[in-house]
Image (cartoon, rainbow, N blue to C red):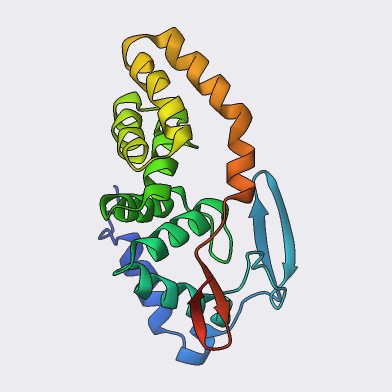
Length: 200
């Protein structure tokens, strides 16, 4: 003869076990250590060990970013600055998506530096963004119309890159050599002072 017991779900069993404990017992640690794993390496560490390894949010840096973002909403020069800062990780966490968004906002509002920067970024590709010669041509054309000599020089490369993969590769290699100069030394429009952001 076989004895059949009513089946209980695991959740019901767990709830029954919790109901038998007091709230203090339920919240009390069962062990003085906790198991932490990074990749394949695991170790038991005391519960009071600090594990956060990122940079804490700096309230002053956050205040500056928000102040510049507010200016960037209405001024294309500030939008360009903010995009450049996101691109470099200068005073903000490096974020290529935000960099492109603010550069595009500045470029659409007529800022020639942003238009030229976007032309170069789209010609070369940047991080996860591959090259886009058509976008590069559009932005470089706008910058060239504002008198940017470098944009006039790069425009034929962008146009050729649209037509031919080899020309695209050569344009990227040629431009990559001069990228670091602009990336490191391109000037900002604004600086931070005791009363907030001001124009240089």
